[in-house]
Length: 432
Image (cartoon, rainbow, N blue to C red; front, side):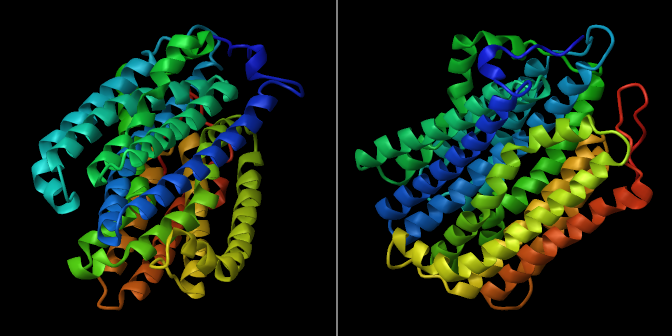
């Protein structure tokens, strides 16, 4: 099956998808700005203890969304490879597979909620849990459609999905806040964006075509690979979006209730680096899949150098401007320059881990991809258990965890073992 020709609104001049790729960058900026505004609204509407509770909920919601984002990565790879086959793809429709996984995650949330819900959520616990479980199914559909769009290089569609999902969430949160809603009302409003893909599917012929994309492998193998992606995405989400949950589990309640400025600073320093990178992850997967010879390895090294340079410059800027920016959220949100700098460079190390993992995933080293993120999460969590002041534990955790995971991924590059792209017929086993 040959890849789809981009429609006029999905291509643009300068080659297929050039306009759409710029749209992915714009959508990542929209997503970052929308997230900032949601956090700003919550900080201004809620008092500090309620905002600490909201930030924990925000982490839990995006932990689930982060896990299901693994569907995007594997679906992008599967559809991208299926477009390279000489005949029609015979694998299952990726949208159906993704929705099935979303339903399974939803059931798992409801089944396990008695073990953790009361510890995380302050009010209307079961209402929030049910909302998150429904959101899991909805976001699985979003992730499947986005992955199919990425695999077919429909980058304008991919960008619309990401941008509108964030904007709808912001709009509903703002509307609910204007109605003087309490903590639970704002929490439930955050779930709205996960359903926007349904409207796009109804209105866009290109989206409906992408929704019919099939995998390059049979259903059992696709689900197995998605399982690996979800496991690694769970570790990824734990370290990136679910970090406040780890902090809550390892910090006395009274101390955590006063930690809203630190938790907010962690979110704010990560977004400028991580959101654009995560938005372009599907682009990078197709970029690496289509590489030949040593090109994928060389591209990785250049990107790593760029990320670390941005992190170093960003750390300096964060130390200079960060404390002032934090005060926009209110006089109670004071954070010192060293903390802003350390958190920003820690975000750059997280981005480096994401890049090395993306190369592993593009070359179907799913187990090694997962192992790197699991090791990073375990090291980060272990650091939070140290008998040290809160800030020291956070510094060590956010620096040592990503470094450990990156070293695990680097094992895959020994002797440039991944220099030749894998394909459905010659794919080798994971290198562990």
